[in-house]
Length: 230
Image (cartoon, rainbow, N blue to C red; front, side):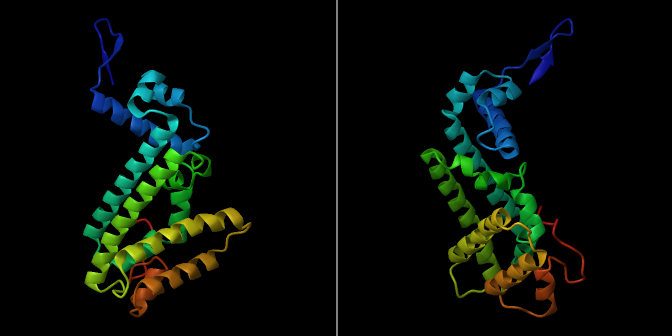
């Protein structure tokens, strides 16, 4: 943070240790999501925050440790976002339809978006990052399980399967979308929507027209709802 000294000269306000760590972490999230693990230099993060490289290392250890902290924070943010969405949504199945819509998954995984952090192959060679990724994904699974349990309570999600099992199924769908993006020369929108419909059929009992609309990412009245959970 900067202020202004007598004479109009800019001065840097001293941050508390907690605030400095938070600032570094925020800058690191943007950097890793935007450029990928290999392309990011600690020097660039330090320069953006206005500290030296040793300060970054003092706060987070190695570059791998910093990336693991980024995954941890991002998973927490996603979990809070899921909770907030659940509080606003009466039909969990409809919410999942929007979350899993192919167009939205593409945006989530594109470079610059937070979902790209979890599919960065160059980062996974380090055991510390692998361990951090496992912990982060487990936290996401637990948050999804809570959402799905709410859906079981409201009758929109099948109740013959444990919520955590369904949560891992949903997460596998997210990963599979990236697999198809990587290995398919010409993506098929028809295939993606067919897969979404099949996934929703597995997650909940169809209930007529509203269920078919949810599979298309629409509200019952026909309004597209893809952006509602963004």
